[in-house]
Amino acid sequence: MSRAGAGRPSAMDSAVLEFVRRRTETTRVEVARELGVTAATVTNSVKRLLSAGLLRESGYARSTGGKRATLLRVDDSARRALGCTLDEDRLSLVAVDTTGALRSRAVLPLADPADPSEVAEVLREGLAIIAPGDELGAVTGIGFAVPSDLPAEVADALQQLTLALDVRAVRGTEAACAALGSFWSGEQAGSGLSGTLHLGSSIALALLLDGAPFRPDSGRPLNHMTLDPRGPECSCGRRGCLHLAVAPTGIADLTRTALTATQGDEAAAEAVMVAALPLVRVAAHLSSAVGLDTLVLAGSPVQAAPAIYLDAARQCFGDDPGAHVVVSQVQPHPCAVGAAVLALQTFLEAGQA
Ligand SMILES: [Zn+2]
Image 1 (spheres, rainbow, N blue to C red):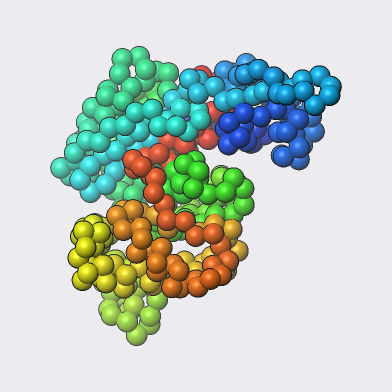
Image 2 (tube, rainbow, N blue to C red):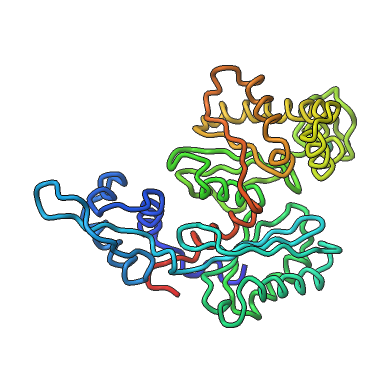
């Protein structure tokens, strides 16, 4: 939002930082070998990351004959980034450190998520909880996972508030943030192409390549994709739109049904399975069309009844899913976690506060 264009991290520094984060502890030689770049490139990048306090040296690797290599780690005390998302009745905020680990969280009730002044006030309250005193001045930035139906006035109010507080802000779609939250929580492989099909304010697909979003604003709603031209009429004027099959009475309602299903209600379990099958079928088509390595199913109904969605995936993909299928279980709110990761990816730059 406010200064999203300023201070983009160097792609190489980000790649080195991400590689070290995934390995927990590694050496310059290993980084160069795994990233396929020269030793000099890694040495320069590591020098910048060390002086920025994002990496630290943590001893020596075991000797392999010659001089012992220095071990590198991400400095987890270095920075905090914040992530925020809005649901129909609440605002969720998280703080993550440079390793992506969750440091604090706050969930505040919202009476009306379409009311700009209420949303701004609740965000201000949440920030005071999660980054009290001068801590807010030290955060790397805040990411917002934006619902597809967020009114422009609410987006403007959030932007005005972050500008007034002098916090750098960036926006991503819910789906892109859910994908990042899943990736950073270790649910996906460290490299390759992954697709996250997210059930949130809309049904949307976001792609990550080696952990980075194609675009933070990718993940446009698929709600009115035609699934069955002879299906029921939709309010959009067409027939058989995807959302009518995947969440016939809305995502919030489907989530409630999914929770009921996990308490042993067989009718609810059947209703969720009936809704899960078309979702998984569409996911299978998208997955094979794009050539995904990992397919992630995410969103509140999926989190509420993961076993049903996994079962639907098994029924649909059979023994050969092509892609590795994951049912996302990120806690607390995957979109808020992913939004914080988006802020880290956007604003972390060597030499920058
Ligand atoms: Zn429609």
